[in-house]
Image (cartoon, rainbow, N blue to C red):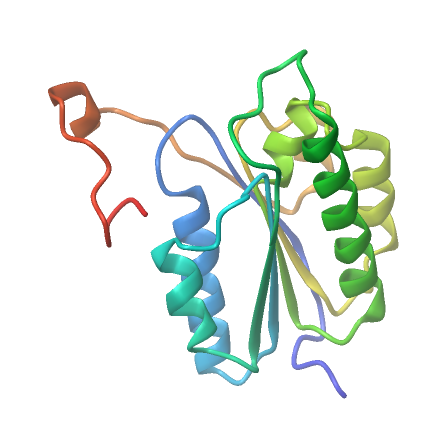
Length: 178
């Protein structure tokens, strides 16, 4: 299958603010609307009942989504084997999908968080970025993007939180935050 992109770039959505995954998934919706093929791999997501998964599944087969993650929260310095195994499985899938060259856009959602928590090696991710086929657009999301990742990317957007309803006691709302 011929890619629709003649030049694929590397994008990063990072920062402490809300909207990194939302921005990446908005790109996926736009791309599918133009006939592109999009593959999304979510890291550190052990549940499959979020609204975005249900919504994006409606865009199949042009948009595929898989998620990898152990149950419960990951705590830095206290890695559990199921989180490590899921991250490894997710990264192997990411390598397969990116290097196949069959997808126009590949989104690695929360991979930067997986790096920060030590679930994946940054050298492995940097190697994947350097081997990316030239026609594949690659999007990475998550807090705490390293200088090395930022240097390698073509586009970096930092989400900065100025105000959040959680500060006023408003909990996550179905259809808005999840």
